[in-house]
Structure formats: C-alpha cells, structure tokens
Length: 355
Image 1 (cartoon, rainbow, N blue to C red):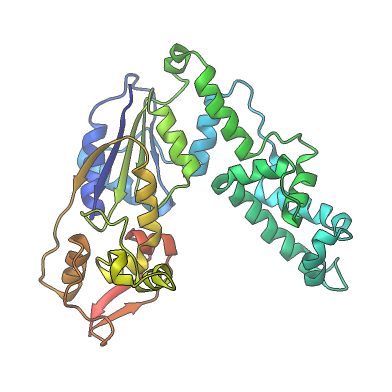
Image 2 (cartoon, one colour):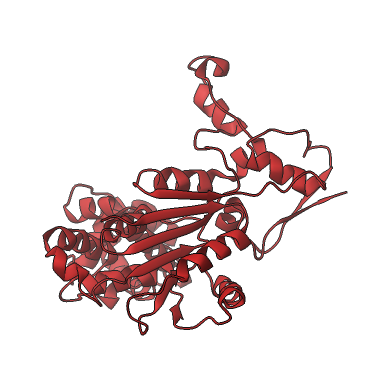
C-alpha cells in the first residue's frame, strides 16, 4: 500500500504545523525514532523549537541530511553492506592524484596535461584532483547512468578513462551509484513480508524544507513508500502550476531561428519567478512524475506592503505592477545558497525592501 504525501505551502510555519499534526499519530513502538530529513542544522534547530511549541516537547527525533538518510536506507535493505571509503570525496581526491600521472601520457588527457603545465607535481595537481573528485561524487548521485556507461567501456574521454582506473580496485562496487542499483534490485526480489518486519524500514519518514533532491533520492523515497509512510513538506512560492513558465532568456532561446515566439504559446507567468525559480520548477516537475497525495496549504500575504505585493503576485502567478527595474525594490545580496534563494527557504537569504 503506497503512502506518499506531498505537503506544499508558501510559509514554513504552516508546513511546520502540518508536520506537527502528522506526528501526533504515534509510531507503533514508543522507542522508535521519528526521522525528519533536513538540509541544514539551522533548519533542525528551528524545526525542533516549532515542534516543541506544538507538543510541549521535542524528543526521540533524528534529523539526518539527505545523503545520510539514503545511505541508512540502503544499509537496512541490502544484506551485506559493501560501502567503500575509497569513494568518499576526500579519499577520491588523493586517489585521483595517484592515478593522474600515469594517465597524462594518453592522448585523451591532452587538455589535462596542458592545464597542469610543465610541473604536474605542483599545487595545481591537488586543486584539480579535488575538483575532479567533487564532480565524480556528484555524478554518482545525479548521473548514475552515465557512471555505469563509463564502467561498461562505452565512452573513452579522459573522465571515463580515469573513472575506470579508479574502480578497478573495487570491481565497480561500493560507490553510491552501485549501492543504489543494488538497492532497487533488492526491493524487487526480497520478500514483501521481510521488508514489512519492524526495524527493516522506518515506519515514517518526513522530508522538511528541502529545496531540491536528485532523482535518485526521489526514486528511493517513492520505492519505500509501499512499506513506509513518506511525507514531503516543501516550500512552494506559487499555488498555480508553474512548470511551463519561461524567463525572457529561455523564450528567446526557444524561439530563435524557428518561428515567432508568439506562435509557440510560451507562458511567462511571473517574470521574477520565471527567472529565479528554475531549480524549484525542475524539482516540482520531478515530483509530479511520482504518484502521490497532494496537500496544498497557501496563504495570500495581501497587498499591505511592496514586498507583500511581490509575494502575492508570485503566489497567484500574476505579473503584477511592481517594476523591479526602476529602483523601487533593492535585491540585497547576502550569504545565501542559490538553491535556497530560488526555493524561498528562509535563513540567510536575499531580502527585498522598498526605497
């Protein structure tokens, strides 16, 4: 039985209240921990205080980050964990440094050899190795199919060749992409009763306030929803469907050299949302690919201030009358993660004010 619900709203306080109501239904065992997946320790502290206000206490709750949670789920299902530290990002940095010198003589590495220059043993090698390790780490999560193509020998550029050298030691096992593949295969082959046994999979998982998740994580959450109650609490700045709106630049790119842009029936919606909401738009399009029960809860901020009018226009997908180009609004740069600013997650973020 699938139990996959998506709670959306334009205020974190509203989402926190919905989470609090969900947690009022106790788990079968009082000793089992609630699992709430968050993206930062700041969100963990804020959410803990909100739940304590609602329930007078916040206890026996674990707040893992997405990658930690996914690895824990893999360990619960797979019979023999084969996690290899060789594919941790920091370890991969030194492994890339180890394999690079032997690979530089190959013609496929001409660009790498040119970048390193006449002294391939210098600091550039360490910096490049760190960057390559970071990319490989992201490929395992966001591009697992590409990683498997590389391991199958279907591509021969320098990144594929370097990756194949690195997986020779482990036989292609132990990294996150391989673990994910084994996990989905195990869900199809294992007895459903075993997966329903206490302690194999968590009874309930909540994902709160995360601005974006890779497809692999969404597939894992959707897969365990047959046995686990999965609830997503996500900030959405717009109550309307905005997956097909385009920024001015995207419209120009789509209509360039084909037909007139007016004949393409392209939707602009709210220009601010179209230009800054690309990541959120793609994430909600991804969520819509998975069958779920939707629970929207939106509040119109009204028109009492300029900022409220901007938020209301975004909420209702209206272009509005606020002209951001005439100095009416200052978009002040702060210490902010681009993903957070696009999704409207509070914390350290850009602020708007009238002048």
